Image 1 (tube, rainbow, N blue to C red):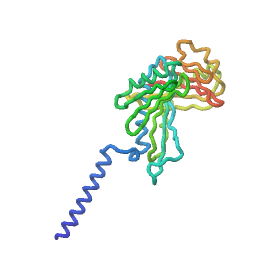
Image 2: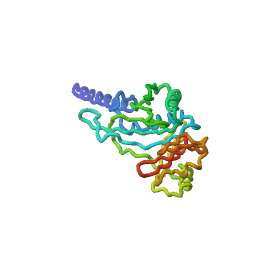
Image 3: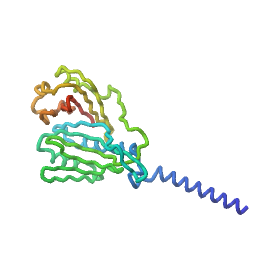
Image 4: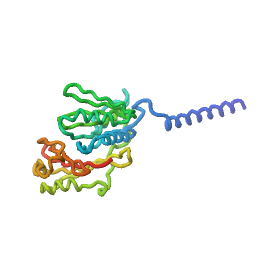
Length: 261
């Protein structure tokens, strides 16, 4: 009888420990990045870039949302466990000489929990922030008139493929980009769509078409007050609610339109 009680007690103790472990896994917040996966981080990545976009002045900026990019062929979560690392960029075109002020504006508009900081050091302007869930955010000025905001998952285990959801075509309007193609007399060799969900409940969309040429013929049709940036390889302007950018990449012309949030 005594032995039966001992066995019963051990079984009950094991069940309680297992139950507590499952409860902790479901309810306690991770205390280290390696306790989370890439899939866990991606909603935070998207949320951070959506928050940044929401701080921008639409009258003087044009944004382009990129897709998820794996940054390293290999990284290690621990000495014995391999991981992966992804980033996502939001490129923002602004009028020259307003880059630093735009970073300050973004910092002021982000939630206090981000603990955003901006450093102005001579010609260098940098923003850093913590989006939570071990996701780091950086803002830099890679060239005059261009800002790049990057949300970084850091090195984590990857338990599922990383792919953007393919949205229904009717939800992302191609019309602004198609209008540029029509002006140029070009056809798209490729269409791309990038999307994220905004904290307001809406969505941020970037629709891109890849074609040939330099887009020079389209520049003459844009009224000067609408132009945000006019450079040999980048031309960005506002067209109503949409921000459009024409940029030369290698031997191709990429035309993008971004709306949302």
